[in-house]
Image (tube, rainbow, N blue to C red; front, top):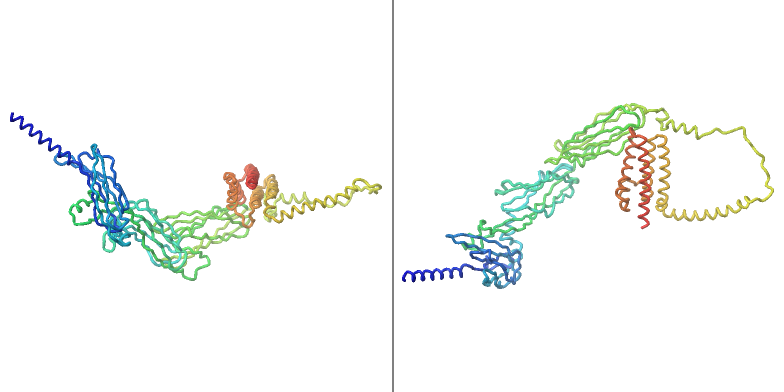
Length: 611
């Protein structure tokens, strides 16, 4: 009996303990890191639910925050722990707030559902004191701007503060930090007014190293390097390089509370990321002019350079193309080097060069510029291309250096079928045409008939009388139309463009029939260029193929048709000056294509004009 009584008492006590444990196991509280804040301060507000099964919570309802701005939140985090076999956990909803007014404010209750019940927090009173605008600017995640600027900054350095016109100056931008940061974003690139800039080794990743700066230890990374070549003298400025840097900061201790200091440890994740706008210092560079006494062949090149010349052929026939290659290599701004002009003997033609640049963007800009000149000898004989001169200024020796290539002797043989007349610009076909076109004056064997007197007035009399009247009327009509067209020269050229092109095409076709490919391509290019000049209203002295292409595209001419025009023009220009190896079959193809292209372009431009 007593045993049963003891058992009942034990069960009752156990139930009572479980009941009390069940009542007190769940708690929902509101806390704040400071109850008194400045007008421009930022602070954190926490709603914490504690219990054995935090995963069963639902429907969190925050209060309104009168007098405060929500900068971030709700940010949710959770933690679990087991002590003596008992499982407990906490669920935290946090906010970052900033006052919007001065005074005392009450943040109301928040609520959350758990196990069919609703839990509420107690209201929290917060006092907001008056602050200064400076505090607003300086308060950033508990760190002032001065503290951030001391721990995270960008430093721009140049390898020299005084330089010569055209001499390289290398500017390096380094990021110094004592804090943890994530990937910076560029907010403003520096400007280089008065410089030609070349990026040096674009960085894909930022690699930090440990270095000392003003006696303090920092993590340092090179974030940008650029080579600058001054194009004018005086004191030039390099504007700052600006980045938005996400800085990961730990909330600073706000009081003497030992628990506050403990839970502010980074182990508990009490950190936040703030955007810090960092910018580098402004650099000033003094640029001096180059010394006087520069040779006539100097065109502004500065550095340490070499010059080499090559000729692909030295024994050619007249009208056979030759390539003269000049190669400038070394240290300096390869892109700014002006191309030296070779002087050619009489009887040579030279065309626009083809230029290739190979630039090595290391710490010192170097590379080479290759210039290919297409030259065509037109007359036979022993010819000599004189040396090509190139002068640069060497900043190391502070002297002008003139480089010269070797002279080239060329043996130009007369072309096949050539004679003295041909060398003067006349071919055998031209002489043959003269014999066919000019006839002797006939002096005998005339078949003359006596003239009969007109006895009656015949119909031809009336025709001869009325014809001048109709001719006069027609002349007046034509004159008025001509006056109208003359008043608008562009309209007249526009209307006659295709007709003029057909005439030129006819001349080129005659040259093709005579297997004279040089004259054929010359006349074909004249026909195409003349048509584009008239149709697009471009003055002959101002005509360029690029301008014509741009105007065709502006008139909505199909881009594929424009490409065909460009290909024909390029083919004509090249073959005109290097006719060797061209066949009549290829010439006929290009002729037929040119006729089609002119007709299609004319139709496309007219259709656009009618709209």
